[in-house]
Length: 113
Length: 121
Image (cartoon, rainbow over the protein chains, first blue to last red):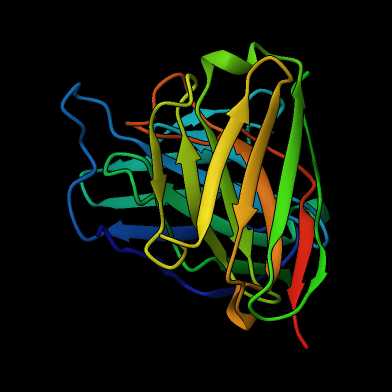
């Protein structure tokens, strides 16, 4: 199975400052159609997860443009340009190239410093 | 707007059974793969099972294979998870999650609010 590894696992950030979360996969996530199926999810405290980013860098409808995704092959990054209070929560990457089983990263807990 | 509403969670003894349901609306249910994903208390997300839009293809995580059965009724826009031989480590919030038109490659674009399953004597 593909293993997804996130870092850091805990991320204290000052309001208004940028934040960056890394996700690496044990195999390249490039699918046979040339696309890379790497997703990012946000889970706010007490809420269900919601998808922020799909296929590495595509933002879902309603996701603020301060969120961006990048990367290729086995290494990916979620960036928040200026952290706001509502961004507190846990962020997960998930690969969809080798499925099933789907595999999530361990999660990165973002908190305000 | 996609809506997914889970039900059926509760307290069950080890070795017992439970059936979860997920009522879907806001999209053409039969066109999309559907998943169950769980989250143990204080832990991360764990994918459990997926079923194709037609219902003909199913996959399971090794941790539930042989004990859980995913199914769907496209006439009722409802997804199910039959859970047998439940163990304490099955205790989790179970989320119904909408996939894509195909199972592979995969994504999840919508989640329900979750239903809590507690396995304890």
